[in-house]
Image (tube, rainbow, N blue to C red; front, side, top):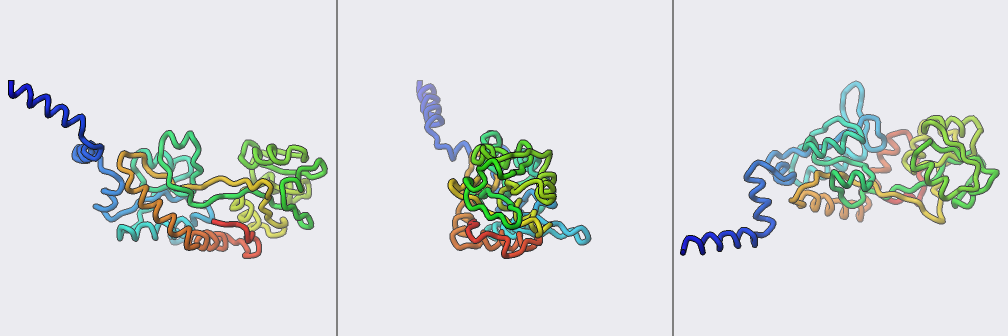
Length: 280
């Protein structure tokens, strides 16, 4: 009789156990949380994307990495007094690298619902506004300025740039090109008045060819999407919370903007090509 009561009490206690108990049990079975692994190994692993300026630059000769994301990652690693480990990847593969526990952080990911089914996200790293590279002599300020039949708009087919143009400038003469380079070539050849691009893409395009014109952030409305860091989805949320606190502090002090501007200048952008209203 006594043993039956004891078993019932033990069962009730298990049902009432807090979530931390089960997290702890999972750790005991070998499922180590990100924060515990980083704390134990003193290594922070990030997905590194070659050629993705201004976030990542890789020196072909020395193999050394630099860029805005590298500066941010080094700063985050100091929270744990950890060293940085770079896992070369791509935007698409970085999501899989998080899922398979090859990396702890992936930079510059738009938090789409599809991605959110597989990984977690920090708060926004930056808010990425949209605008256009405008030919010399044409200085649009709002979407209404280009939403006219006589304005020729270039976009890359199937992109968010195209979606933005068709939604906010439907009266313009829109030409969709196979890729971003072809849209830029149309502007360069005088076959378009503007090329719709997110800010970093537009500024990078001008860095390669300053003769294209100027980059303009378009207002009324301000079209912008968040760019976040991706993290592994796991029961223990402490790692995400620490990175979120780091983001809040460094965005508030202007450090994020400083790193981003340094990365853009490193890519060859001129200071005058970076709009003053571009805020990170």
